[in-house]
Length: 98
Image 1 (cartoon, one colour):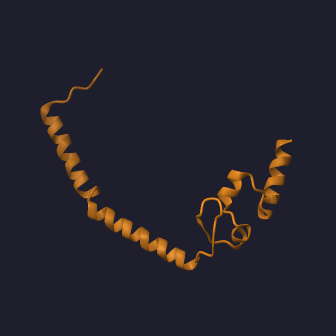
Image 2 (spheres, rainbow, N blue to C red):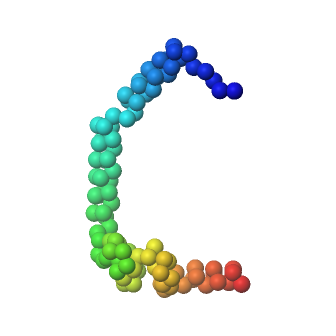
Image 3 (cartoon, helix red, strand yellow):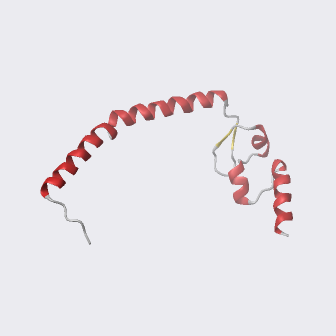
C-alpha cells in the first residue's frame, strides 16, 4: 500500500527539508571544509617531501624503498612487479595457494 500524503504533510516535510539544507548544504561550509583539507594536505606534504616520481603513473613517491625501485606500491602490484620489500608477502601468498 502506497502512503498518500496530504497537502499539509507535504508542506511540513518541505519546510523541514528546507531548514535542514539551509544549515547543511551551505557553500561557505563546504569552502571552509575544503580549505581545512587543503591546509592539512600541505602540512602532511611538508613532513614528507616528494623525492621521486613513479615511472608508471607519474605520482609522487615519498618512501625511500619505492623511490629506489622507481615504482609505487600500487603500480608494482598492477604490473606484477615483485619488489624486494614485498618478497616475504609474495612467498606467503604462494605457499597459501598451494
